[in-house]
Image 1: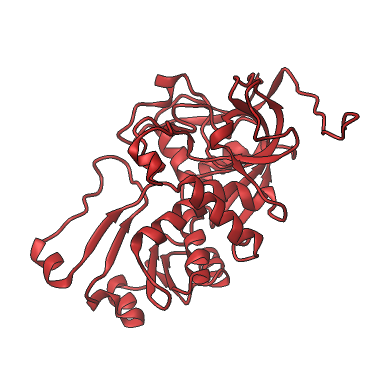
Image 2: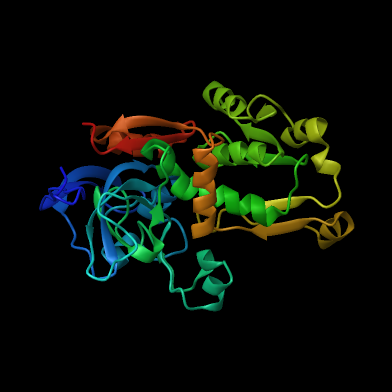
Length: 345
């Protein structure tokens, strides 16, 4: 529907469907419940999400196995940070959005915009950043509010099924590839590259002229990785020495000046990155941490998608399938991404 000026008009319900985290911790589960539709503040927009990606970070938030306060500390019951949908209502002060515009929410719902990091294009490290699905209601809820200044516009030609995972996975990998300093023609290895984040990295690396290798396991992930541009797939369950296998393909194991990008975040106190300093010094090795993408990374990743260089990597499922899909993700059974369509039962 539209009003006499042609502006789309939406009937906003009092309640909406949401995937709610129950029994937060190691034995958590997700239940589909009816929750109140929030009212946007003066500087916010209300989004009706059509799709949300399921990300492993959601699992960690609901399990509370990272070194961060639990969701319940902030009164948050819905995880998720890969939402794509449409603006259905504007706050009183919002001027840069219109009802009917398409928009998405990302791992960071908001940043301060006033610190040196925000001014220097590193707002993904803003110390006042608000993490979606942890400190603010996430994209497992169909209707969500989002600060107008930090909501990402979704361009024409990019479906919600492609846009929603871009909000986190592709944006994060775009930032990591930029931070790595790698150039066209150089090898880039993605451990776990058959998953939702890694497979976006494969596509982006290919688009940037790099030569991707994926380390993962299973026929589904092998098929997806090669389809999306990986030059080689190393199954860690089928080779006795993964490093030697990668070295045989790319010689990266013997290369001077290699870069290790720390992107994935395992449970707290389970992994330590380090080694003999002389090994790093004599081989000019670098270890660089890279967090989520910036607003600009998201926009650039969406542009890659608009040009056809980032393709759909997800299986689309209905809302009723969200609880089991989350558990499948937790068990490592998902190749690429699962996207939940709120409009499908």
